[in-house]
Length: 261
Image (cartoon, rainbow, N blue to C red; front, side, top):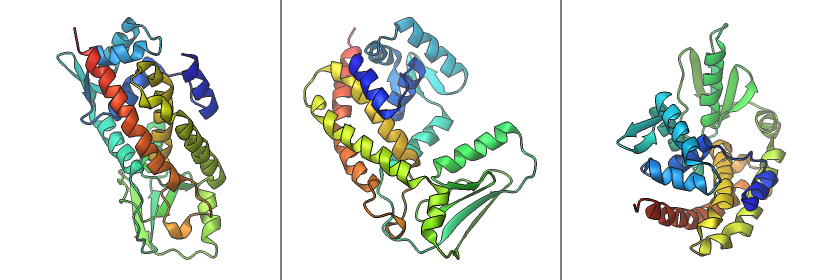
């Protein structure tokens, strides 16, 4: 499994636990349901013992992350929503932008830690950028974000002397471009591994797929008018689409063999 460790270190990914393998696999599966034995067989490629996987499945079902039904496991409601966000991240942003912005403001002065975390998670999932802890915003070229309770959501024009400066305050654009560039190079380098029928290629390519999906789920999807020059993320999506088609084919073939008694 040294290849998967090397891929993870290059992309800043921690070694995957049983839970993260289960979630990443189901989040990439449509519909998001697989047999326990399939998930166990996949985790074994990462040197994770079957007992560890069974324990993780039980805990995740008890906590509502998974729904169990006669040996099969599907995503719970909250994670189904995350899968929708993930799928939207792979889509190209709308070509037309009317110049308006979304602004979300937490109106309640005192909020619990769980409320603050939920607000941040919702905003991040909607690709909003944080101007300050209670104010998040973005160009309105993506679907309207969900509005948590006690949150004001406004859409309208924005007067700004330097929109590029505002974009840089909302997102670390250089870091995002560097991440997209590293992922693009890794996708191109590892794509030939998927042309065979060898499941040994799955651990390293699994890590790369998970890292790319995570990036695309929160990448801001800016309108072309606000993109920096030589912005890499638009090139990442088609490269990942090609990679993911080959990866899912190899993964499906492997999981089919895992259903054979």
